[in-house]
Image (cartoon, rainbow, N blue to C red; front, side, top):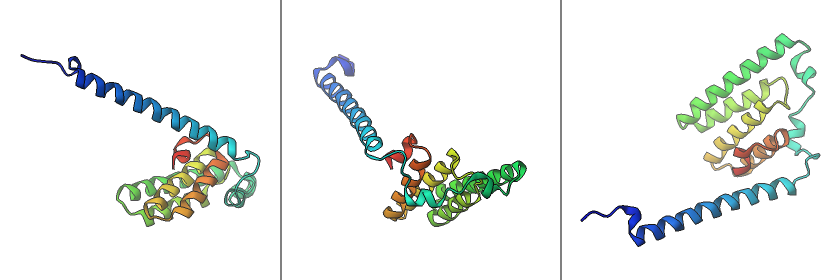
Length: 152
């Protein structure tokens, strides 16, 4: 005699418990994000983000073509950092993400927040948690709604 998994009281009870656990987890994450966003004033960037944010014209050297070229180089450095990260070469990944941050002509661009977030994850893998937290703060100063960094 064959029973489906959902027809037994035991399986139904555990499936219901899992749904409740998932829902509670989603609510907890939402509350955490809300509290994180409401506890940090949006107008006061962290010292790391303030130091890394010169005006775009100053960093780009004044030319749009030069700025686009620098931005493309920065994205290539990030892509290389991603490959290093996937290969578990976290030190080298940090170096590439740092190069991407330095090359970026507009330090307020959302891509720079991604560079900081990626470097934060690589630093966390190296157990450099204070540096990772500083990178997360810098990323949030650029893009306060960057959810991946909020969770790191």
